[in-house]
Image (tube, rainbow, N blue to C red; front, top):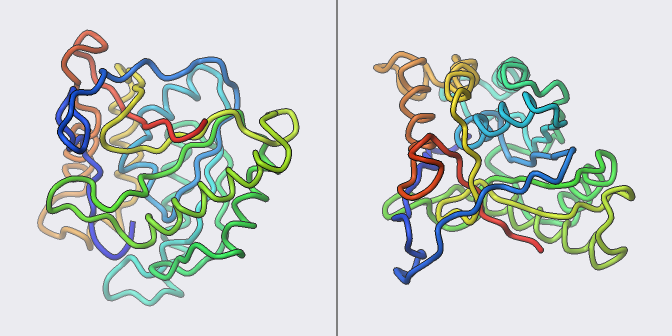
Length: 257
């Protein structure tokens, strides 16, 4: 992440919608897929909300690829982008390896200045066509994670671009993973519609986030990196009453179809 330390924790009360109405409990995440493409804006975005689920998926033999819009080069205060970018890329590669993701791509868009434009939408569509995922997972694109927790412009712009690129692909040629057109799109988001039980995968997620040591040590110098990582991951993976037998879960919101 860049700009500010937004924490995508579980902020919507269980059993309610963002508007306060009743809602069904999240369902188990679909299992009829093999390939997943994770699309995010910055290094550490997967680790702040979904890496425990990714660790489970790769342990089950599923393929997960990360594609990042930027290298997070504006994200380390007091460090020039030319120095910070390579550091953050390497931290992301180490982090990804912890949860079984071997393929990580950086699209080269400017950190903290990501815009939903034709160039970004084309790059996202190209990534979808190249990797031929069954499902696409991206970071939350809404205005705020919860009261007093605004989302970043980069996340909102990038999420809007993911949705536009996804819809354009489906509108042009329909849904067919064999031809590079995914069947489903999810966001790692508050107010989830689906969940992944992550018993046994919380520790790998903590280890993965802790790999962003340079970034986290500057973000909060007073708190040890591993303590920051554990606090964030355990908040994201907190049990939801009424599902998964009280075990830790990661929530996702189904966006399409």
